Length: 510
Image 1 (cartoon, rainbow, N blue to C red):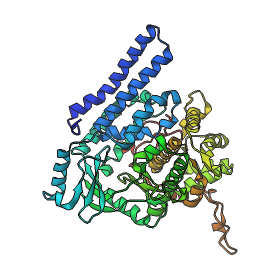
Image 2 (image 1 turned 90 degrees about the horizontal axis):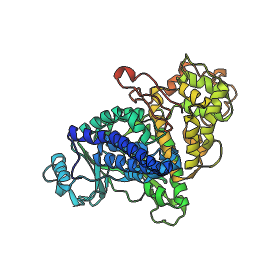
Image 3 (image 1 turned 90 degrees about the vertical axis):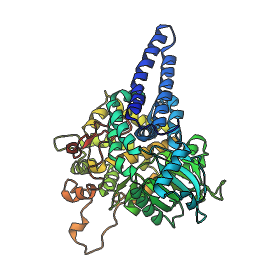
Image 4 (image 1 turned 60 degrees about the vertical axis):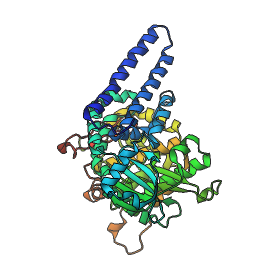
């Protein structure tokens, strides 16, 4: 691997090899079974070979191919163990690093973007990348003022490669689906395609990171590096030491897992409220556990470092209030209230009729983490939820397919599911209810109004859930530009493909 493969014919050929290879291994497996080997043993070997080839190709190509692999990696926890095991090592490799581009390419990019005297901007510059991701790689350096910095250099041709990959992968989506059972790949690809322009715009990323760094500057638990310099395809930020979350997932102590999980949940729900932005790329490679001068504790001194603000959802009013109201009413057992609110927000289309009690029964098992003071997120729980909604012979499956996901909620939905996937990979015990009460509008019961307050203001939240006033709070938050979304359990429907389809809500079961 010497450079980012940019020729369309080369990338297409490599991606086309994925389904062909899968078919070949299936034939090989059939031959082995005919030869007398146990079917279960052969199936495991086929799965292992598939995993190794699939994620080797996705990692080498970087671009949209690796982006897809990273997005898929956080759903590994939802897969049955016998399926997840051969994928786990290959998936986690995509969370932190990929084959790097050579130093000559990096130097040429720096010279083009920073000028021929770019070495004078640095006291030191490490040619060996500290991390290589989907559209750029990061080098450790010392800025001319003595600060240790991270220099992110975008791969030449990354934009073209991203779009080419995702267009090509969308054609193979139905074939790629079985490679990671339980995940509907096509809507995930479509949503990633919609984020391409923002991912490539380092000026937008710098603005988003500055907003977070300013807001969390005095925070004692969340750390966001400051932006030092930004130019076209070059982003320089303060360097952050810490334990990558992927390492905590692999080898962390239970204390590290619990602390990282709690802070990850806190950042997810507090970010939109505090900055009007939702970090929309929550795979483990973008987070660090900072133990600082207390590596052995106390745990309360450990912090969460957050990286990569290339993909954000703009929510100037924070998370939509109907989310919190619906969660609260569901936990209170108000089936009709939940049903009316979800219908008003567009989760239940006007042409669909369903029993409110059945809807509540569908939702409550997924809300178990919010029903208790502290919840243990683990793979077994996530798999049970995936299996429950993926059973095509179950009434739950039928009900899930009747639900709709409004465009304003698409990215919120993916970020939430991805974060839950990471929490389950961590096996963290998290006080999720505390975070919901602190940061999600509408979840905590509003205080009683003072005597003399207008009667109209005393109406119970959610009683007018079908009205435009409630819809206003939930729409316009993610915009219809986010294409359809995957649920992580295989129930998302086809994503919107053209401009006229972007306003159509993608179906989902969660």
